Length: 334
Image (cartoon, rainbow, N blue to C red; front, side, top):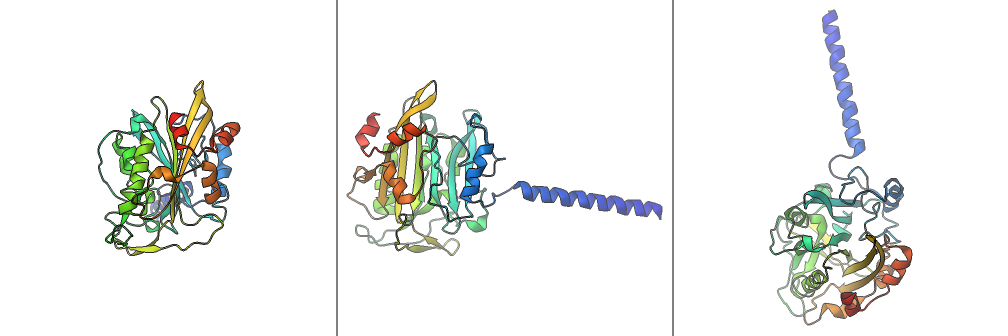
């Protein structure tokens, strides 16, 4: 009888230990990321050491984006102040023998889209080729994503293409990561996609803009880029179309605008001391016959229309000076 009692006590102890371990697993946040508010994200910034190596993953930080000193990262500004549950994450991958950041993003599962995707771009990221591995983002629960395993199956007649359709449009282009297979695979995650008009936009003016930005990569340095999808300009009311994704039956809001902000820097002792930016703001439409340089704007203007505070990790004086430029030629020659 005494022996049986000891066995039951041992079993009870094991069950208690398992319960505690399960609770710790949930609290620590293993698996897909939990939602956080942008304001909470910015409050974690004080817990991250500014001098931490840029090649060290910070998965233990709840919101690695917004809490790091990387030059491509925006602050929240006023754009998302009313949104309390967003996924703010960074993807990492092996590159040149060590773990390096690929891209960061702010994702809203209410619209199945990232409001922005931010990333560095240097010559080592780029070569030739394309390998398509469409899929879900492991950092966000699947029920909060839409399937991109196949095309959306949504057609839209446009002024130049009566049989046009919506493509799965990358925010971080796969061609900006085709020298690093693991990084390129991550560009095919659902969280990096939005519905984009294919002919006259995704496969035309937008693709040409992406290629032009790659041509601006400094020989021995890095570009810092933020690409965004906007449904309405800040403070305005605009109609938002939706499409049915035939892969999973979900209704997807379609962005009314796409934009890109690009930063070059000058350094002293490897620290940025000055910079210049260029912005592009495109209405989401069949823009056949138009060129991307007709849509240049200043980063200041993008901030006004979106409410985001871009390139916040530039030194203050350099940020103010850098973000007023809207001249594409000046940016190219900087």
